[in-house]
Length: 348
Image (tube, helix red, strand yellow):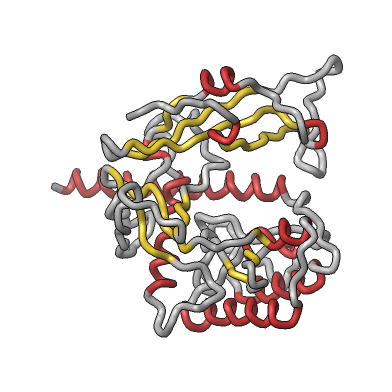
């Protein structure tokens, strides 16, 4: 497998890691760098990742987000030296999926490397909360569990009766390498997410925009049988024609099921909807429950929010807490599966 060569900052993704107290999630402590590597010769995909601490000033206080706006904290050499390969089983779900990940038939897409298509987008696993320091076998691949879950819901979307909805993301199958799902091929949606679109001075024609978005949600609820659970400005794309496209089914579940494996809508703008008793329900494992009412509340909130768009700055601590919860649930599922396998082996 070829190792990454970092020649500019566009070669890596960055995640800011916070610690300490404060309503905004605390102060910046470190930066996590990551990059994907595809090796067409050996037919494999890999994730490289590394974390570098952020040094404070004379008062030992790390810089704030505003201080970092136009400043590069670490050099390319530092980033290159920090990167190490992440074990495949911590990122990519095996195919076929284990029962405790997701039960679904997976559509294998055409070879992405042989003929890249500008109308397709290759989505990789969500690695923001990946614990690369966990010992092998200590915890399941929670990132892989989340990714398998999204594939399951996209397969459900693709197999729904009738024609695909024009305002919902299109699914074209999975990229599979060395027996693992390493990417999801989605229809490329030109344009920008709703928040970025408005911040850059863009506008939307309110009535047809929200009518189309409501139609997409209705299709998802009543034809596909899923609740999105994460409707927010970042998950609504605005096309060149001004039409919305609802993306990201990572938190989608049928109505009434506990959400395990995704991060549902919590809080953006000014209103923490997730704490509304009408939209926030707790399941047997302590996680939120998928509810159509959450999607409708988010849609209604969007109608108000669009007049005064505010970046999502609250809810970071809540999101981190939920991510920890999902890892714990994944650990429990893997322990239970291992116990059953051991019991079965003893019976033989």
